Length: 213
Image (cartoon, rainbow, N blue to C red; front, side, top):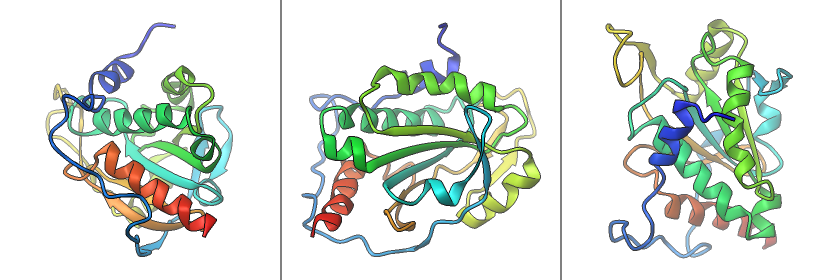
């Protein structure tokens, strides 16, 4: 299968290897707590097979990392970076049965006119790199009117650029990635300045340790 530009960008934007990454030590999992922020909102979504789903059902039962993205984003500090971080989490889960069985990744588009289920299915090929990894689903919505309340509930700002031919993509947006516990409560919200896979993994393991306590 020919790699599509979005996947190439995601791979190029993968987090740096440990020897190349800026000095940073993530907190020890379980040495801190993550207070609940609010319940994770729901909404009608469509998965990569074209099946209608409820977002609320996909943010319960496992620790979930929800990344709001769109495929035409070419800003290396935005959607490609977020997808690269999720890919890193997915790869790490292959070596840890607790992660493989207790973690879920969701990549959800806020560009439904362009990011159809068929297109999201093409993106889901990235999850096939590590078939033993945790669940990773790629989602879209039926229409912008269906999407609007989801974006509002999650506080995700999206607007169209004056220049739709912008090389960085046609939409302005903030980067927001949500960490959601098994009960469906948001426990952390990452932005471009805090979306580091080492921190996200420490947070995931902290929530998984809560289940064992």
